[in-house]
Image (cartoon, rainbow, N blue to C red; front, side, top):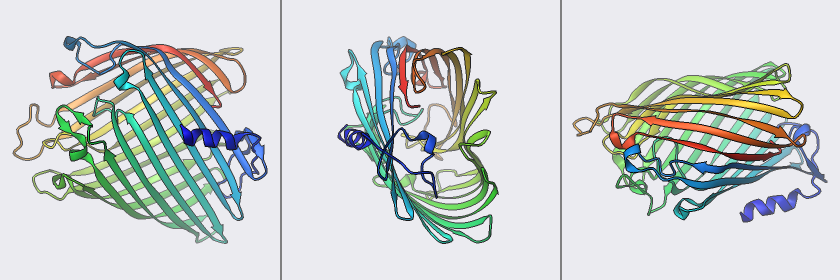
Length: 401
């Protein structure tokens, strides 16, 4: 919270210059002062009811509670000579009326610095996350964890439209010592460091579109559970679309050779994907989709990882005047891999997670929207204890999004 308040104070009377070499989109900057540019944002989500707070099976008497999530955030830009400095600070405040163990304050900080030296571009991107939330679809408990690390990239313009680059990253994941799920210590099983190095070639196809081919090598090393250690090689082709393009966002498709260092665990050699795309039709209908296919680690030492394949999509339609509506749906499959010789309740099982919902909204101004949302979620599994469903419904308020 202190970090966000500091950014908010900086935002008062803020200013930003025009976008240059990775700087901010001038239309996105809301406040200005000297070399600073700031865009404050605010979300109030799920001001209403969650019918299954702990993701419990139906025969376990799921608990219902009144809840809300308030998320103030700010983007801050600063021009430093021939470079741009940007930081995004986000504070997520989660409140439950009855089950105070689920309340939390989650902080994330993302720093981005980019410098141009003639034909050379240098980028450094430190990140920090301190959260008490569910780490994806696999673990249903809200647990405390800290993630921090940095990415770096050095890119050179080799030809008029062709860029060559090398990149590297390092990330540390630390679960709290008290973080337990299904009787398993998450710190013991999942604390790890990830080190990645790679190279890429990028071609600026049009002023708003670039395509790239990237090759990377990653080492995952676990602090207390070396049976999970792995090396992997990934090759991917990607396309990036400028925010001013007809279709916005990015998408990549590739191949990963995932090799655990212990022979008792089979590896994965196959396709991967990652994308986040939006398209607006005639200024009134907005289509958005995110998708993912990649390896994720499980808390279960006998099924140490799974292949997650899924998507989330939404369609937002402007009805009349300030009124709009949105429908959304998503699906994810978690395909687990067994360790050789391990006793498991369901061999190489595949769990399914489905969501669907929608809402209506009323725009009180160009940046302020009041909405009402209903979302249903369900997980199916061969394991009785991993099946559950629930409903979330309530009011939302967004500003600057």
